[in-house]
Structures are given as C-alpha cells and as structure tokens.
Amino acid sequence: MDKYDYVIVGSGLFGSVFAHEASKRGKKCLVIDKRDHLGGNVYCENVEGINVHKYGAHIFHTNDKGLWDYVNQFAEFNHYRNSPLSLSKGKLYNLPFNMNTFYQLWGTITPAEAQAKIDEQIAEYGTSDPQNLEEQALSLVGKDIYETLIKEYTEKQWGMSATLLPAFIIKRLPVRFTFDNNYFNDTYQGIPKGGYNKIIDGLLEGIECKTDIDFFEEREKWEGLADKIVFTGKVDEYFNYEFGQLDYRSLRFENEILPVANHQGNAVVNYNDKEVPYTRIIEHKHFEFGTQPSTVITKEYPDEWTPGKEAFYPINDDKNQAIYQKYSELKKQQPNTIFGGRLAEYRYYDMHQIIASALTAIKKEFNEN
Ligand code: UDP
Image 1 (cartoon, rainbow, N blue to C red):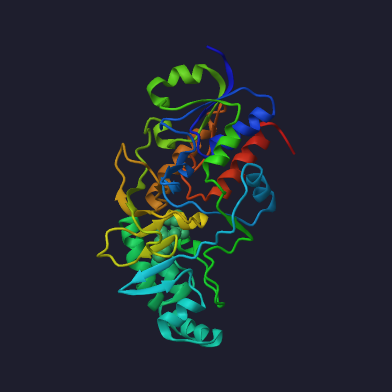
Image 2 (cartoon, protein in one colour):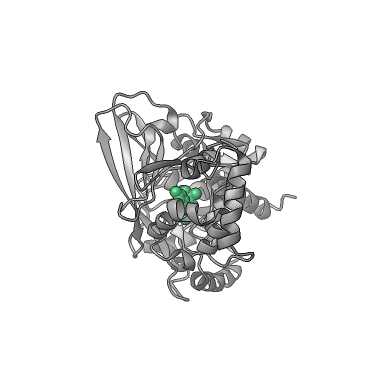
C-alpha cells in the first residue's frame, strides 16, 4: 500500500480541516473514520427533504472574521439566529437570559427594574469567587432564574449535582439587559445552506477517505502507513487507558417524522423540568426555514456514557481533569502524533474553536509564522 504523509483518524471538523490544509500544502493524506459516513458530529442526514442534525443541533457562530470567511469558502450560510425557548413548569421563557426572560419571570418592564431585581438576588445568593456551576449561576443571575431555568436542566444534562460541575459551563450563556433573544453574542452566525455535509465534502474533496474503519482494530497497520498520525478520537483510548478511563456524557436521540408543517414553531425548545426525561426538542426544518409539508423532530435524552456509546461531552470536573493532565504529559512524548478535537483534547469545544485549533496545528506543523 502507498505511504502517506498523514493518516488522519476521525473525519470531524478537526480531521477534515487538517486534511484539507495539509493536502493544499502538497501532502498526501488518508482519512479514516469508524462510522459509516464522514463529518463526525456535524453530519446531517436528509429525511423528507430536511437536514437532520444527526448528532445534535449544530449552530455555527464566531467573532472571528477569518474563521467566518474560512467556512464560507465551502458553503453559503443562511441568516439563522439561535433563539431557544425553555419550558419550565408549564410556562415558556426566552433564552438566553434577557429582558424578555426577566419580564416573563418577574414582570419587570425596564432594564433598571430588571437589573435591580438581579442585583438583589445576587447580593443574597451570589459569591465573589464561585467554585462550581451552582455558585456561578447564583452569582450571575440569582436564585429565581437558577431554579426556573438552570438547575433541573443542568442536573439532568450532566447526571450530577450542579454543585459538582465546573463553573465555566454556565458562562457559555449570555445575560443581557436588552430584548434580544440571540443565544450567541458573536458577530457571525448561521447554518450552511444545504447542511453541514457541504462543508465536509468541500474540505475533503480529492482526499482519500475510508469509512467503517476502527483505527484500534489494526492500529499498527495504520500507524505504519504514514509518517505522522492525526488523532481525533478519545485520548484515554489512544494511551490504552494507562491512567484509567475518562468520563464522558452521552446523548440518545429519538427522531419522529410528524405529518404537520410546524410542530413547535422554533428550532430549539428546552425542557427544564426534571420530570421530563429529555432536555430539548429540536425541529430541524427551522434551521433552514424549511417549508416542507412534514417535519422531523428529535428528542434529546442525556445518557450515562459507557464504553460503546458515543462520547459527546467531556466531563471537565476535578477528578477527570487530573486524569487528563496525565494523558496530556504522555502526548508530549508522541512527536509523530498530532492530537486534536473534543475527544483528543478533552475539551468542551464549539465548532469555530475546533477549526481554529486545526488551523493552529497546521501552522505549527508547517512552521508558518
Ligand atoms: N443550560 C441550562 N438551561 C438551559 C440551557 C442550558 O441550565 O435551558 C446550561 C446547562 O448546564 C448546559 C449549559 O448551560 O449544560 C450549556 O448549554 P448549551 O445549550 O450552550 O450547550 P450544548 O449542550 O448545546 O453544548
């Protein structure tokens, strides 16, 4: 068999961007993926003419014009703005936390009234040095919002008490005193017209790719085929669980095709109450302003991760960070392997951050600036 410059394990955004950029620089790449399709978790499946985000909703957003231009090379983006709603105890609230939410919760009309209410709650329940997600949320928005829109959602999403979760997770959500339901603060946002597969297809065009290949089944063969490996799978598995297994959170998706044009009037509706076993319902057509006569919805159930299930989220608590730290040291002793992506870096990355890190890895690899 031919020899490659890089065998790239995993065809998600990190692997695909790396392969694209390395090929552009004249290198020979082989991309392998254990699934029966390319694209990792951004992969979309067409059902009834609707792009179904098979591994959970993906909404591209970034503040970086360079990254925005980068993805726009491969697909045109629409003007979708994520503005999820949350159903809590029979009432709908706008997310992220903004003047609409405050009005729905307290009836406050002006920013000054809302600010006073939040300040009062923070003064009573907040702390200057939050140590976990609960303390962080109470210090950011106070008790009413925490109890109505955060606590139960978070605890079912992560399967553990909010007092044991890292504070940074909740900092993903903006708090603002305008009537603006845009979930993200970023300048650029949208969904690729025609779905994310267009981006993956564009990135991997002309590059040799093989699906249904589990790297670990014939590791020596793949490693022997290239000067370097780009590894985007689970870092603990790469090192044969030498320091033990890292924990992940999994998800289970239940899809339904419904014979109605519009089921919930929005792409994303969160379900805060702990009695509801799923965290959100995604109605995929709304990501692309679809006008099909039917609709596809997905109920997203948080799930305990056990070997064999998809590892969707790293659990960056102290215990797992300590284990990851040890793997991180081992990585440094592997000059011929480049590690990247959510699983190999054990980081809660968004899409734009993964692309940025793949571009950084390329610059480093090719000694560019
Ligand atoms: N979150 C919450 N209530 C919500 C939505 C999110 O408390 O209605 C919290 C929850 O802890 C979640 C975190 O915010 O894990 C990040 O949510 P986001 O939807 O940004 O993350 P995703 O799961 O889409 O990566």
